[in-house]
Image (cartoon, helix red, strand yellow):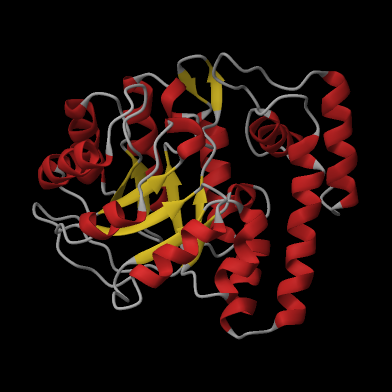
Length: 311
């Protein structure tokens, strides 16, 4: 990936590969598990991923204070040290806060910003496109759009994405809708734009997305088993269907096991953080309103990790 931070972002070569949406290791409500962050970064990069994404959904960004977000950006960029591109989520309901965080990220050494629609007020597509025109021109980093309708109540509709892609600095989109029809429509719209990256979020769809022309994935499970997701990506690139199937089966074991232990939609994040804590990588503290798994769920997670050969 060749993404460079400049005052006026320009077209860049399309990103290809696996990006880890890093969990945020927390010690308490407003402080980082610094030693855990160091271990986590090395663990992820040791698996050969192609990029690191902080302050996304898996990173609990909307629940974190602005001081802590800046500390996480600075520490992560310093720990990564340019080994892979660092992408930073700058989604906010306040225009000026997105600009401020992107500028801080650029100064810290991040190489791209990731932007979902501002949540709470349900903007129309014309309003959303105007917002993007104003915001992207104020950002010092290339921008990946982030389609996450389950959390923002708003899609980047395909025509809006195509229009936004004409803005200097908009270089790709991460789709977490789990809607493959939507994704395929985007692929059709961008058939003539090999410079625009289309990445998938749900790792359960990663194998088929790659085989059908997607450029990569932003896979939460690569916090835990980064090499697995890189192996699947490489197998898809060489069209090794048997290998893709085997790696996909292992990813589904994570989804059906670790991500499905709890009773609520937070189970994915709780299971992932609990797993990392079981492996001694980082704390499993979660920002409120969530809480870490209790002893009963913790024991089930350990059983799943043993079945995966990690304990």
